[in-house]
Length: 537
Figure 1 (cartoon, rainbow, N blue to C red):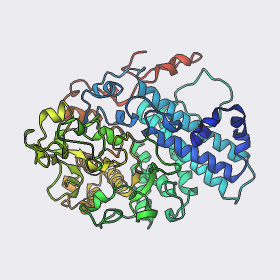
Figure 2 (figure 1 turned 90 degrees about the vertical axis):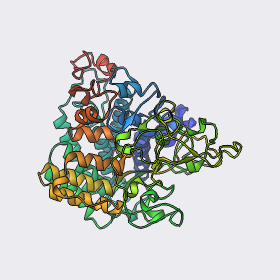
Figure 3 (figure 1 turned 60 degrees about the vertical axis):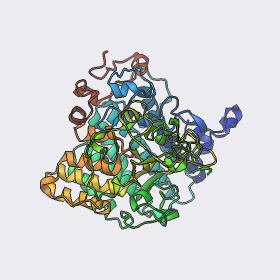
Figure 4 (figure 1 turned 90 degrees about the horizontal axis):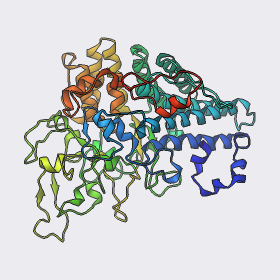
């Protein structure tokens, strides 16, 4: 599976070519392990894919990533893709598509990582002796990354750390705490053996600092707050990373601000435009070998209004390209100031906060179709109907804008995606300090992020978990996996009850987990494999 994902070529359907790329033939040199490692990266990126182009593992319906934003405190899912509605409405069943999709994707990544680890022990033909540990670190990072999804979504899951040669029907569920221990061990190994200098690796390749960033999060999930802080500080104090505070990159001389610069196409990697904030960047770049396809990263289509269906509008790259509004931002945090018929909701941003500027949240929309002379250039009003019924116009998060004049109907976003960046590392550090009962140090960490945004500095009395969760919206909305953040902090039920009117009376504690896919339970005929509470047998 891993080797297929590397190439995505129809010729792999020819039997003899499959045998040429069997692990016993491929994992025989450093170059062969480079090929296998590329497969792990490709399979990881496929989380954001939908229709399976280029051999992607996850496909059909909405982008699976959207299911991890639905049913939280940030976005409504209104008349959207049917694959999202069970997650948004809390009618989730063990047979729903993404319940099985994430399980299968994660275990595919795990099995590919385990394959590399087994053959790394067998191989003796390395270019240099340290190659063995480097590729083992790659594999162990991705194995930890996949188990991260599994424990967040399903709780206790089978832990597998080698190749299973025999068909097995008697899996048991490993306790979440034990799986977390394995995740932390894998990431500690990765911090010790991945490259240290991000300027000496190719764009998108892992360094030990990406492992430290994820290790901090996993310590937080395990409620180990002191080592979580130390892991975050390792990144912050490494000397390689800094928050971007001055204009940079492809559009630095155009209208905008430094926060919007982070999300301009081609600005994500440190090598091209000196982005020192990016720690790990998934590579989706347009028209590049190993980059994106038309089905990769549908985040733009999720968050951008379907404005082109309004008379007076035509698709434009400056308006984000083609959006479907599968996720619509909630008023309580985005605010309605500046719109005409939606009421005055202040939102959670201060006036001076650049993350609230029109460069980062587009609130003012103007008709752009020159063929509609009576409307052209006039302001289009955001109303209750355009926001919550037709989903054609609402305040839009511009970090996901993407369009290309040669094909404005593109479904995918051919733009590299920052998976980990330093601003989040500071917010993980703040979370660790809160866990230690030190709101003063937590406020210091949050203030580093707020300084760049031009927001006021906060003090210890203001530094609560709810403030931190709001700050993560201001900085990371749409980038973070919101469901994971709320589960890790123990706030999913509380925040949904407070902010998500559609399901505030439905959500219960058991909704912190998804059901186990029914197909897994049915196939495990030789041992009990209990369903998660609340979802039947």
